[in-house]
Image 1 (cartoon, rainbow, N blue to C red):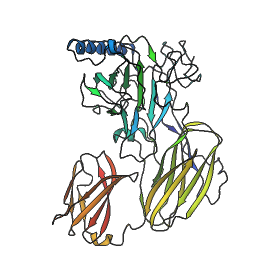
Image 2: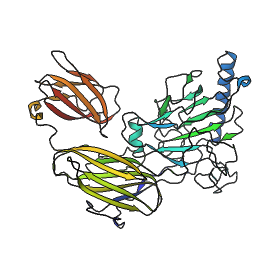
Image 3: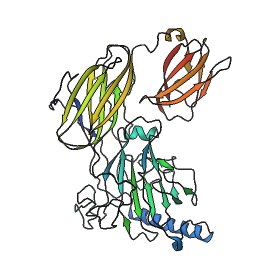
Image 4: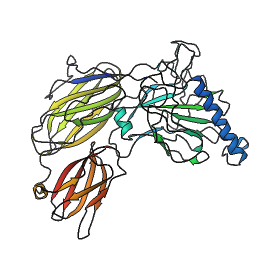
Length: 465
């Protein structure tokens, strides 16, 4: 799958529809991804996978360890969605769909997806896209680096192969390096391929081990022939690999009559993926450099705050309702913004200068769904000054941090940049909390709030590298 992270950095020609008391002109716009035009696997790589899978199946069968039995073959599985956000990610969603299976056997540029549309691709070499491509949004490289987009088993089954250790920051189609992938066979003999995973992220389970529906398989990456982090999800009916499955039911699905999803998602999925606050506009660097999100949930009085909303499948003729809400739950701004074009991906940004201390809300309603993001302005607590000399080191850190304080620290809470709590600790000992092992956290920016024995409070930015 080919991804190009180009950006329309400034759009001021769009008008604010039904705007009342809007904070500023709008910036942002469409986030452009190029159409895919190359095979996800070379012919040689695909044949090598067929060979490895069948050799492993034969080995498991010889050792009476193969879970699939043709004599007890059941009906085909019903899949859950194979991508989920990590538990510490406070986005509404972290995925979008760039391509479906191509049902038109002719090439090039002769495209038919299950819905009789053209949301797929083929190549001049005769390849028709054989899977569903699901990408992460927003900040796909940042998501990969911080393990935010998890790949999970769409159905229970047995791991019959997996490949790891390959370079995972591919940006063009010139590579001959294989992808990192997990292959799962289901009770009916069908086999699901989960490809392009992050190097070193794959499940620790081995060939022959069983996985449950929803079990972690790896992190979305950009290994193999790829130009950006995404999952290639491909399904075959059996180990002959002569019949693909398109898990979507639709008029132009020529492969199978019924849906293989427990709940089939619509062809387009217009929705808010994230509502965030920043110190500056996010920077979408050239592939494969990680984006600079400039995220923050903590601001001083009268700081300029950048308010963003990230959309997928933006639908023309719809509108956003937007609110910036003061700590007393009254509106600083409440306005609407009309969307006039279809964009597979878009982001929009406004600015304001909150001037009241306390917890604020940035609220976006789209397609009947409301997403709320909280952030803080000003001093977090009147007792914070009593912890003025308290420090945390090292910062940035790798795994363990130490707390140097003349005040006994009875409790602490750590939140990520999206405001989601990732750790809470209490200590009733005489010495309090002096050290924390944070090896379980992903790399990134966090805010740790320390609580003293007399309800003192201090919040410190903490960076894991």
